[in-house]
Image (tube, rainbow, N blue to C red; front, side, top):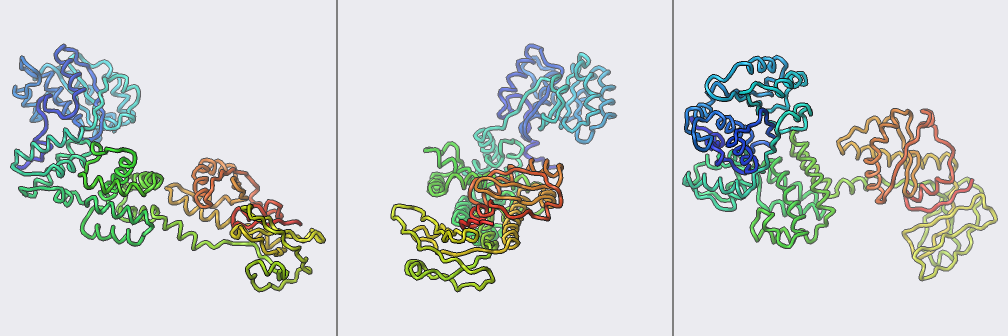
Length: 569
């Protein structure tokens, strides 16, 4: 029966272990001086050799050779390799994680070794044990019988209680360097009589991500094809990803805000059978390459790419800002994590393309027209009409007779912003001051705004409500739940650099304060300026019934829609 490469290539002696020299040195010294500890904790990412080294340690303490141990050839070493040695017990804590399982282990510890010098217990995925199981193991782990050794293996040591950590000698396994993995893969290919290019080898080693087992599994898949010649393109086909050219083009389209073309390019790649999750990882790696080339003059040692591709990446990084790269890396990294539990990773990647290309922001600007208070526009004096652009047709109103506007003051050429035109002081109760910032070199056309109090308040509520709804919609895309905030809050006021959120209960206020940093970022992004918020608790009836309009209303409107209005009641 055929065995996978990661099984047939499992090291039988310490010298065959890849990339863990610091750990091998400690263990060999302890074996030579007979100072082996009673309990070990092997930590590290998947595929770095934790269980393999645990078996080698079990071989070494039971090896009958008089030379270097383990020898890999004596009866004890061969029996342990086959899994038939009575005194080496391997336990999978993921499926044997209860108190009863640990009690059985404690009972078996009392019996002396039958075939070797030491009885070794290898507990894999030890972080899966229950709290009761950990407590049942404590005393035995601290003071085991003389001839018993515990070796605990885990990928998540932070989940272990401190009482367990303090009783073990901890050894941390590192990710295996790419050069070490590439050399081992090259040797395997030569033994199989396969000619594999250097680019293909380096691509395989890069995708192994420091895991020997993952690297051998990928290489086993490539070799299973039976091809005698393997290049980089062949490896890309088996990995379900594409070359650098694809990610260069995709990034360029996103940077140019060509959302539709970018989505079409992704669709073509997925239609060709590429894997969406792998595309996300490689796209993230491409943005990382852009960052490296932006700050390093000679990035060849850090990038697994040819000189031609490095040149292309450098050219692209020259016109893509670091802010774009930073946003892309953070967003795609989050999507990669979310995609682990998703059955539709394609949709998540498409959402990233839409967000990074700015299409969402442009859509919101089109769909959300600015709401302005109703204004009454009178015919300007002839002197002003000769200078200014035509005004719209006057709107009939039942308001009192309009006050004639004074002649506009001349504008100085050196002033960057014109002075607003004031109405005559004959009727200050109805005077309104208007200033449009989008016409900086000409005086504003004098207009009069006298909507009723209810109309002004309705306009203000509408504007703030629409902004708040947009914030809530954007908040839902961050992964948090904004349903409670949407139901029990409203945007009470908006200033140049601050805003106030009104809530109905203390519970809601506490929840909103926890989300305030996220809300700050969203509102700042919408308004294109930095703002900070505060929370006030009001009576639930105040959430519905607005108070009378105040002088702050003019400032809110100016901040929101760019019109300077002074209201006097």
